[in-house]
View 1 (cartoon, rainbow, N blue to C red):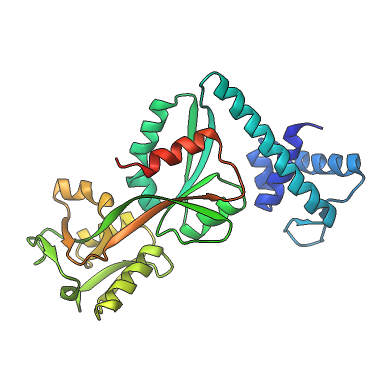
View 2 (view 1 turned 30 degrees about the vertical axis):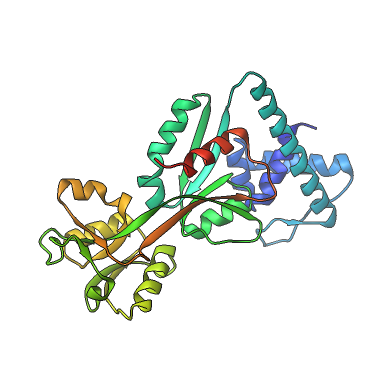
Length: 295
């Protein structure tokens, strides 16, 4: 029995898909099925329940035991590799990271570049997704790290805080607010706004702060993409509240005016999440340490 077979089995359980497990391990779906059958024959136990017409992968009681112990074996194998690299002072391997677009596009590139220059034998595999999927992928082991805005405490997850960034008011250069150095929250009452969609953490935080100040804005449009919001503001749909790192280029070129929000609540926390029950690879530990430090 090869270590790769254990990984295929665990990946299948984690991603709940024969096709995704095959893709992750660069093999065919039939090869995944064959490896599962080989394991079951070797141990003379049924590990997966086959339910006709249903796609989910359900473990038997024996499968749950095997999955738990296989994960331990894979973790020990990874730790062995890390220890061997450490003997020669070499940090290598691939760190799989999932992040939301607003953080990944505007805050991580510099950190990834710094990491790669310090540890050229290591690699950051970065993918972009919505907050809910980032959390789910970390919990099921699809990725090792998640990087989020407004990370929420959750059982089974550890959060390492990164430096927070300010939320700022963004408007077209010809808007009446454009020449101001700062704006109070109460001044936004009745103003046309372009907002994030309701289920995004930044939108939830924005709504909470506005409500606390008794402010109601006019919702003109909602988008789930920060770049779309910026374009909508540029063409005059309304104003927006966005993280400062995401609009520094537009402020530099004069395409948008960026105004400080005077009240202290307008801060966006950012954090790295990872599973509490797993030991991070040495490369992942180094990347987390880099992320929690100031630029």
